[in-house]
Length: 444
Image (tube, rainbow, N blue to C red):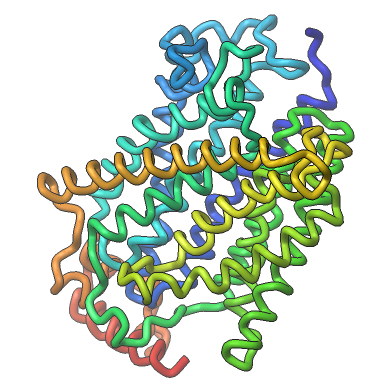
């Protein structure tokens, strides 16, 4: 097909928007942790950019979108992006390399989402190895199964089963959420969990991160139309509507349960809505998006407390927001799907029966179980070999100092009028500022 300049421009801009989501996630997660962990939390997101980019170019794109082997994985025909630089390398109406760039950003942020579940207690080397292994063993085959379409000869979820995942509810959020649960179990609870107040050290950073995520998500969802047309417009509107509704849904639950509507709740509700609308943004009407958003916000607000009842330490509520939100958004297609939307499938409430609901459920259960299993085994192997769980002393002292020899805020220098220096050059000062930061965090 002939390349369309408008479609190409839209996909490249959308790729940049999705890329921005990973720095946004770094701010979002970074603000939610204690002051002694903020740099490590941001580094865990940032390092996925480096690791996954190289993997994607060398072998990832080929295993995800080049050919098909058993409806679960691609082949090695496009290793190193071989053959994709030619002028006639086209995917639909855009250059194939534009599609490569766009899908790369999805591959980057998916493992980054997992990091929030193991905040404060993971070694950086263990995390790097996990990202490389999980992305190769889980993300590439799952993304192929969901998004490689070839008239029935593609991936088993999207092309054979016909389960709908417009932009990543199954391939990204359920996939990452299940892995997050596995790692939270493997690494165990943080020192002082359920006893010490582990409050966010910077709510302004959380709001900044949530805003960047919301902004970038328009590329995530509307960009998945892969063209600048009506489908992109509908998914754009649905994304905005559902997210706004989810904020309201979350805050209502907070108000009922705790008597206050919080800043953290508003940010978390927005992310829950973004997660839930991701698989269904091309399958529902704007009114359906409102219903979906309100319910997603409320359900995820309740779901984040499950970790206390079930006893697993999911530091930043990845399971409650991404696994539960992604699953709910995907299943909602079976109820709220409308033939008037681009996906053209009626759900139960529109006279479509339970067929689509069954397809959505099967796809998500299989992906969730597979991702959890591989992540659990991989996490155990890493922990027993090079070490994944930080030592108790290092965790108490602070993962920033232990893993990176740095601290985020130099309170001593700020108070004395001195310029900040590396924590490597001033270890004694680093201990003082970490202790000061803990005291400051306790006051918040």
